[in-house]
Every structure is written in C-alpha cells, then in structure tokens.
Image 1 (tube, rainbow, N blue to C red):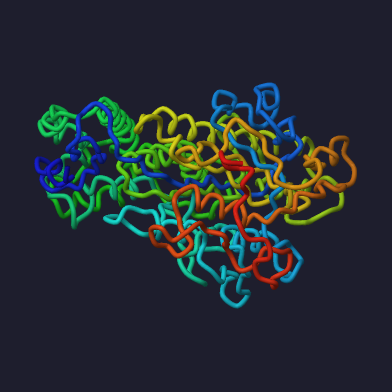
Image 2 (image 1 turned 90 degrees about the vertical axis):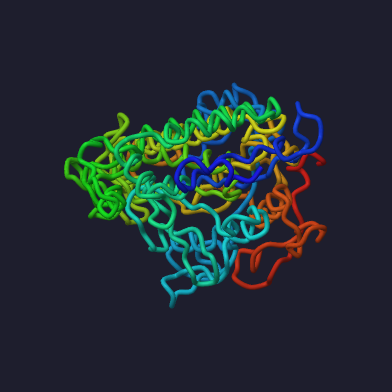
Length: 526
C-alpha cells in the first residue's frame, strides 16, 4: 500500500500513516508475515547518578522486583521481564588518559564515537557517532539516512550538550521544539508540503485526523490483519494525544491568510501547550527563582515538551519514518518543577559542591537527596518511554519488543567523573536477539556499585565516590547492538556480523581495537 493513497484526501499534507504490511501482501489475511523493523533508541542523561542507589541489588542473574523496587529504577518494576541490565562496561577514552581534556567534553565527544576529540575544533569528535553509523544501514530506503535526535531546553552546539556527529568534526544538533518534529510528521506547516487550506485549518486547531476523516474511514475499511487493525488504532490514539499538545492554545488568534498562517506556528507567543512560548535566553540554566519568562519556557520544555517528544518518537516509530532515535536531556539545569525545588544546577550538585569545583568540602546541605530526586525523575521519564513503546502493538508483540531502548549515562558517579561500571539499562529484546529479565555481568569478578553515598552523608570532605573494576570496552556493547538491529560488517545484506566499532577500545587514544566481537552473554544465544 502506497502511503500516497492515504494522503489523497488531505490536500497534499504529508500525513505519515503507518505501514500496514498486510495490505500489500498477496497471502491470506489474519497474520502478517512481514518482519517488524528493528530499531535503536537511546535515552541519554548527564552528570552520572548515585550509583549505589541506581544498580539492582543482584549483580548477575534474574532481575526481580525486590532488586530494584527500593532504588532509582523502581519505576521500571512493571517492565522487568523486558529489561536487560549489563554490568561492567566502561566508556572509552577515559578522562586523563591519552587526552587531558575537560571530562564532560571528552565524555560527550567520545561517548558514541569511541574516538578522540579535536581540541582545535570545538572539541568535537573525530568520527561519526553510533547513531549515524546505524541509521545509514537500517533506516528505511525511502526515508532519511540520519537519526532523529531530540532534546529539550535551548538549542546548543556546545560539546557539553552535543552527542551526535554525522561526520568527523561535524556536530548534529538535536531538535528542541516539538512543533518542528510534528511538522516533519504531518507536513501541514511545511510551506513545501501542506496546502494553504490544510495549514490554515490545522493552525486554527482542527485536527489532522478530522481533515481526513473520510479517507481514514475508507482506509480502515480495507481488509487487513488484526495486528494491522491494532496498529492503526494505536496510531490514531497517539496522533490525537500528540495533537492535543501541539494545537494552538488560542486558535482564534491565527492569521486568515496562507502567507501569515504558515509562520504562525513558529512566531506567535501563544502557540503550543507543549512548546516554549518564547526563547530560553540563559541557555539551559534555570534561574534560582524560576520566575522569568526564560525560566518558564525551560520548565515547560523539560516537562510537557519532553513528554511530547517521547510521544513523537513513538509516532515516528509507528510510521516507520526513522529507526534510530535519541532523546538527550541537557545537564546544566536547575530542577525547579514537578515538586523538585532546587537552587543549584545539576552539574554542581553532582560535584557535591554546588558549583564547578572538584573535591574539597561538601557545599550543599542535603545534596545526596537532591541528586536522588533528579535520578528518580529521569528514571520516571525512561519508564514513561518504555511503557509507551510497550503499549503499542506491532507484529506479534509491541514496538518495545522490536527495539533496543537504552538508557545511556554520560558518567557513572558525577563527583568522581568515572566512566567504568556505567549504569546502563536496555529495554526490549530487539526481535529476540537480546536477553531480557536479566542482570548480566560482562566483566570478571563481582561488579561494584560504587561509593556515591560515601560522601557528604554527614557533611565534611568529599571522598572517593567512584568504583574500581568494570572495564569491558563499551565498543563491545555497541557491536552487540549493531548486530541486534541488523547491521552488517560491510553495510550490505549478507555482509557478516559487525565485530568492531570506534577508533580504539583502551583507556588511551591509541592502540586501535584490541578486543573485537560482540558480547555473546548479552544475546539470547549466550
């Protein structure tokens, strides 16, 4: 079924209908035989966490509710059968080894590239990042070969906020406004896509679904499998949810001309309930009072905007418009929403000092509780994403079942700036390739939880908050995920399994790849 047929009644607006495999099959209806696409989803957070509260109580074996119900990962208890928690990975290149550069710059530049960063070029990575490498191989042939990279807050090309690189030294900034993503999905506010009538009607608050009600009815009347009927229903429900957050809050203020109606969505101050109503002038640093317009815009972006981005990610996946997606939460933010009322930004809290200094005396009373609040907030957002993907049917399972949805941190503990024993959780088995319901120790010895709580609990000096061990190169995790989503060594069908990723897999910047191959223990075959 060509999606153009579905679009015929909405005046050319590029509404992204889902691919319904049973409509273009010549076989008996009832169960689609077309394989569901596999996807890589990355959920990235800054500044590490309180590792000894984040990690499960079990270090290897079956993941149980008791092992995470009292810690940071408690919101993920309902999804335990679909979780994989690998223990013992280390990001490369480690701070101070090979390159002596700001640890946050290095953690971002090297995180998804396993490559050095260029101190002469904004400290950008010297290689393309994992998301781009994978997207070039697995994205639909009719779609973009670049990943969908989203964030919240102010747009930034600073290395401390950039994780994605399309080529060596070329940053790929995240999209920060939900309206932009929605417009890409529907085309109704794209001057090259939607007609003036569609632009105007949707800008006035009329639903895209209402615009094509007749065609939707015809489309749903076609003979399709039960799985595709469920997929269509999920798509409509999610589309309606998305629209309630991106429709203008004051539709009567819309312009009545096409020329003025198209830019309305991007320029009028009262536009989207889930988008900032104006600029975030202080970057991503919320003021202590949280009362300026910039502060309010940042809070809206982190809360309603962030949730909307998760919905848009799911909608993109249902429509199979992109199979590599990433959500990045900025790290230099004062949390002052959702019941959290901080006066120090997250980065300073992670240092335990409240500022950019490292070591010395603990400078913030109750700092561990504040970090714990942030960790739990992020865990709730990841659980929201996991739950959303698991609620949408696809093939014989759900969207989640066909993805590797990974919460990837910048650091382990924020004060130690350590990159070993990274707290990582993966949801979904990627079509059966990965183990789930398990904690898997990929290193030798017993994995450590770190010493995050061993400082500032009673005031005084900041001690060692890091941990030892956990030094298996993260390259091997990336190789495993590349194989899980269907990448090959040469990028061609039948090209054999991927065995290497990145420039090096040691703690220095030279030496190349010394430990190739995937981690079989993480796979269903291991």
